[in-house]
Length: 255
Length: 318
Image (tube, rainbow over all chains, first blue to last red):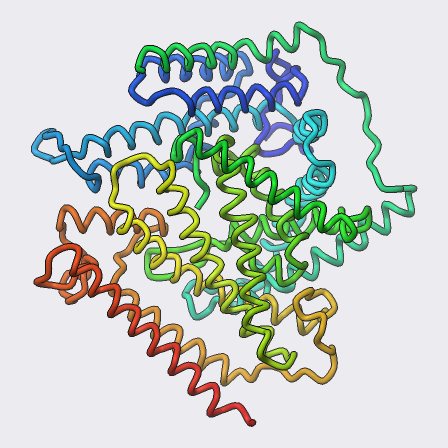
């Protein structure tokens, strides 16, 4: 990945999309996803439009298609569920190449496939173009509860430390010739999880002490509050706005 | 378990968002005293821990694995209100950064995994502990029950949401039966891991276990390993009996989908020779067969549970 400090989810860049303030991008994502979910599934053309909106954003931001495709794998379990719906749904049925498909099931599978994918790609693009501190600052500006954002900040900062610790424990276990794979060996995993909890907790205590020693008095300083220009607002909300209009049209057209 | 966008309709998602906001807001208010500045770095690290824990897949049956929800565990370790806040943070970041669970379904996912799992886990934990004297054994037993059932409750919650605003004309009774059944298995795994984690923490830093704050650190004896293995053996037998209902699939949800599919399409199954295969007892009509199968499953589960209890009682010095 790009820089040593950069997160694996982030694609470094200086595009229009990258430069937009975090809170506008978070708001844009919410708006877009709500529009997508509100669209009737039968309006296939609307989803084509949403896909091109996402493609446009990805193109502007220079996020490679392969990166998006790889990250879309989180969707797989639900997609599998979606693809089974036509087979398990109830009538009326369609005949398609000798297979009996439930009409409601086909529609449901399409709904999940289309809407789920739009949502997933939207989130991927947000994470790819926004550094995590900016997302958190954005949530703050959108008046998310302070405690939640503060906890999220610490979580993100220490996520890799903790998962690294977990990985080292597993390596240590493997180095001693023990690689639990079967269910009855779950105790070994769980014991290391217990150790991990204690380590995390004690690290939390130490982090707090260190912060107090450096003058922490209950809130983190914020640097360089991003100024929001009207142009930014227009830029950020143009495409989600288009999605909302599309959804409204689709609702009217498909009744 | 993370619901994506479009799986549940917009109105239901919106309603769930409002309810979840209320729940998380309530938890925030409740925990405000404990989450004063000191606890915020700590809660953040514990959130990172829960996140890492959720990446830990454990095998439930050959070919089917579940991942930890961690709600009950968080509640036992940190108390219910802080736990709701911490797990909520995990769920929110999963949706926004990792695209795991839809942004519009955030309310649903918060209800299922942050609020319901945690609170029901805590409730069961208190309930099971209530009749026993405070002891390490009581804490661990209650942890197992709480963690196992919290996963099932979460699965049932999903079915409720699916019933209100789900897409696709699938028979709801099948979905309920199979979600609850498969998540009982995942729950048993969650129960074991929760017990082991709580046990490990109880041993090293008993002061960190919120649910055992009434326990004195010294005089509490360790759970004898022999009893642990008996418990594990019985639970394994339980797993085997429940295997009758299962075929091999990578995820509980998928498994459910396939099972409902099998009921309709009567395709072959890996365990087609079993009389209870395909969730319908042989020779009976679809609905009746499934009820018989479920009843047999319940009786077997009950018998095994009773057996566990008897063994435990006979062995514990009274």
